[in-house]
Amino acid sequence: MEPSGQTVTKKQRPVNLDLRTIRQPVAAIASILHRVSGVITLFSLAILLWLLKSSLSSETGFLEVVDILDGFFVWFILWGMLTALAYHIVGGIRHLIMDAGYGEDLESGALSAKVALGVTAVLSVLAGIMVW
Image (tube, rainbow, N blue to C red; front, side):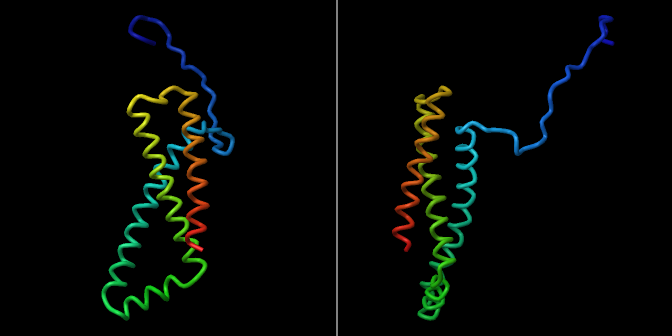
């Protein structure tokens, strides 16, 4: 009971703990992917800087890096790194435009998320063509 003498009833709210049934809006998915692509880009930068350092250290280091980069799996990872970087840049531009006051409402936010995903898909295909 509350101090005023009234009984407090707890609201029975529906609880859905099955994450497979929760449908996120496209703007939320775009925001989550922007954060994930930022983390991937951070780790990619560390790997690429290590490869650069190794390749510039000596002729032997360069040949070791060439051997590392000689394979489909490594090129696939590089394509993924480029795709993550492209999405992070496109998503960052989207966020900057929204910070400027454009596209803040629900409909235009969803549209800008779809455009960002579409532009990234095109850039990903172009990166795939460049890598292979």
